[in-house]
Image 1 (cartoon, rainbow, N blue to C red):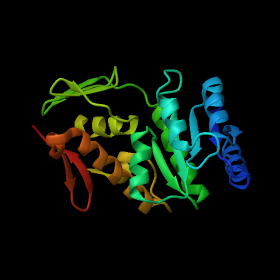
Image 2: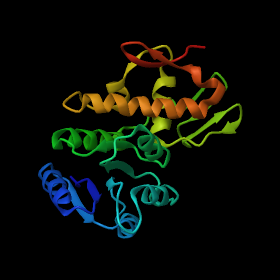
Image 3: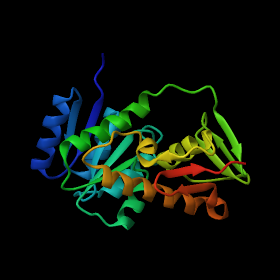
Image 4: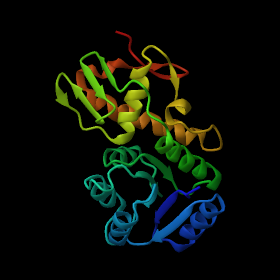
Length: 228
């Protein structure tokens, strides 16, 4: 069986060494770059399954790297898990809007990070469903072409926002927990996980504008898509 490839773009060697050791122990094939510009070039040549991307990098910072990869058709679908010492919510929103799929703050627990990596890779392996189009509340979601239109105007959603909206709209009225929506196991990083999904929802609602209330909060549970 072919190994999943992971590119680590991290300038601190001590952190990179920990990541490489633990990822290789889990059976992944790992490459490492410590500079943002070199990281972009490596991603474009290697086309890894997932990138662990530090925010504070020499050359190009993590946000610039993320923006560059998302604007390139060769790399725009690669999963990106952003690593940073920052923990401000505004930084998380910026990261997601640049196209990051997930966000972990340092210091992190290796076990929780590995769970997040595996969850993102499972999404790559998920088979297609029989239904590839949803229409509700003036929102048109086309899974095949990965587009969302609101009243015939296409929305610029990040990959994670698209998957979140698709999951909710595919089963309107059903409450989803935050853990279900992130498709990752409960564990030591559960509190960070809940903050992460809340950031995604706030960003998605902002882009939905006056239709934002179709994504309803279910108190004590998570979120659901409003029935017609």
